[in-house]
Image (cartoon, rainbow, N blue to C red; front, side):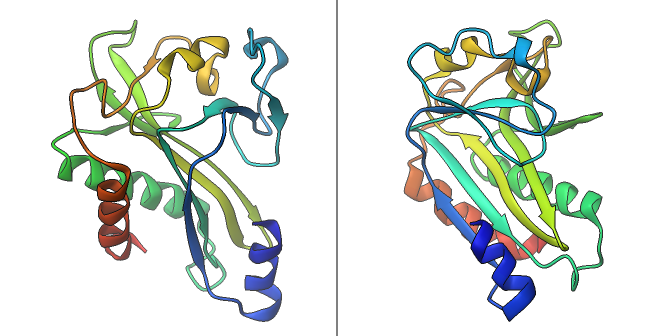
Length: 189
């Protein structure tokens, strides 16, 4: 991913979005605090260079690595994050789920009433910008092991929980989610 992002800037390689799933892993971004990695057990924990704090990646979660040339897209990181959020909100709406932003907290939240804030995170965003090219990206919880999030303070947020499309009763396959992501991408980028 890092090599491809560098090639976009240096060699004019095409912008790309990679859709994938990870084996179970905890990743800590540049703002991750040691005390928020509570009890990872046998799941590896790795710090990486993306923005954000601790999150979990694993089967049942769609990860989208978004490598875009912000040099030709206006040099606006906030617009990129807003676009990523809007992209996910639109895809969730297509699944019958109302996603929303939460002031000061990147990612997408749904009102479940299950946590202190009443909002649970369904999609996390953690990006890095190198020479005006984005890399890393976002993760949407389709049907991951939600108990895995209990081993961390997800994204450093203590008053919100984590949910998934499956936990909300939405029956969508990974292939269907991918189709929505691909269909909606050009609406925002």
